[in-house]
Image (tube, rainbow, N blue to C red):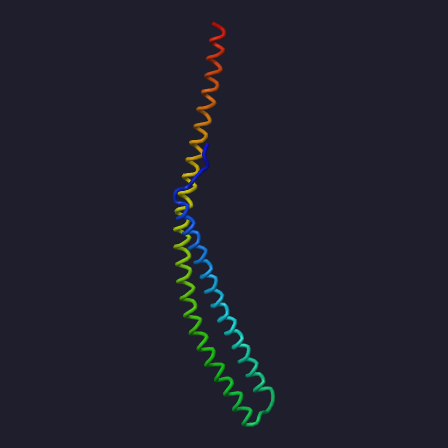
Length: 148
């Protein structure tokens, strides 16, 4: 029996490649979003640390001004990162949709391949059964010819 060949194998390979590419892009988008989340956590820690040091000891007006300027910069940076986080969430959702679509497209062709391979195996079993039947029938025929 000849080897199984799926006529749409190239299409399956292309769809598998696209799925892998979409998965990689989704991973990159998630990593970028997580980097922003980490930066926001870092900014929050810096704000808490600065506020604690501001109230821990008496400061000169110059030191108070420096602390306030630093807190203002942290606040601006936090707002910028929050906007970037919203954009990153949108990108992640878009990449997730693209991945899901690519996965479904590959899955359709994979299921078709599985079905065709199952049909090929069933046909192979039919052929084997037919050959075995022929062998048994031939043997029986030969036995009956010898007896007569």
